[in-house]
Length: 111
Image (cartoon, rainbow, N blue to C red; front, top):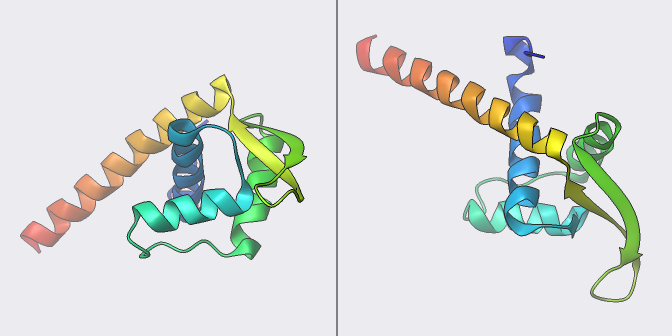
């Protein structure tokens, strides 16, 4: 299902989270945040108020699987992993991202 273009910001967050989980495997929410921050050289920082609702929404959509486990410091944490449906959604989000960045690049070149 294609999203309206105004949903690009939410789609971008989804894409980043899905990509982190696709590349790293099962992680808890805080680890997802750290991974995205690390890879982006601290340019991208996810706030809890954005990340956890997104994780919940993506779990409800069937893109992620969630299960409880113990964190590195032996605390109870919810771990997320990407599902086959999530991999399909990631591919769609990456296609939309490529279209958007190509369009912006064209405008910047010719305006």
